[in-house]
Image (cartoon, rainbow, N blue to C red):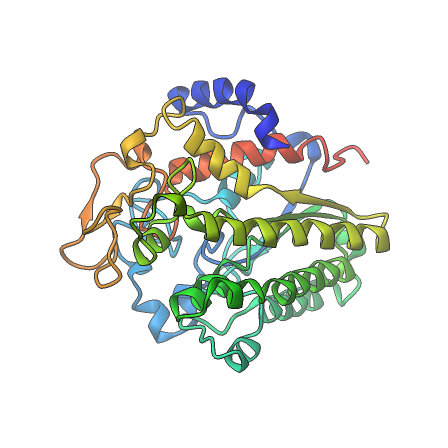
Length: 370
């Protein structure tokens, strides 16, 4: 587990932090992956959402300061720069994974179907539970349909040979299912009741990519929901007992734990059905807590670990009324000192460190030499 090996890793990450070398400590090049495929939500979206509708093209993700640290312009990534999948690409010696909805994209090295606001459950199923999906209808099943269309166009359904050296990421996804429910007034128990359906949808997604020809799949869990500024702001309370040692909301983190535990069980079930496929759980939850636990060693300012870099108002520098990219919203002077970017998503620096943790964790398990 990540948390047991973190002492040595903190030293390595601290060296990387000061040397500005990206993902060199744990190198995926020896795996000789020649393609990357990504399904998920805003934590992985490299530009699909901003291209899918008039709402997307007008969103704050099309405006500075999004993208300013690395690209010097917005790309549709919900960060100031790179995402985890970008660092995975760097570590694997591959180009950044282009969004599927960019018609000018180069897809010979993989493609990205992740879409900001996407849910694991179909939007119709959420609607039947009186939960709306306000940003997109491109849920996981829709992304998988796009993936099938793509593969059918390049290898005519039998992609086994083409994909034997590809790496797939199914997620992170599920965060929006729970967050939309909570923000729309569902109780913790009502939201927790969604977990079996959400995890089953992800399990079916894993099985579908295997049907397409995937033989190496990473399935990330979700981050600790109780540590994000938008939840900390919405559910702020004076009850000291509601917060854990990291000043995160316990009940929301418990929800994340339940999801991740059930997801790991689902992964084991798929493994039994497909013994020739390598499926690895990506422990985003403990990676995030590792950043909180070791914030100073990693270069984050301890007083800012729960605050948004780009935001305005309140204890967590976040407001639902005015968000990053809106006029008059403040931007911090040093984004790399912050874990959270805009209240909902992370900074490039945080994504880089999480990518390092992820690579360190999955590298012995991914069976590069198999």
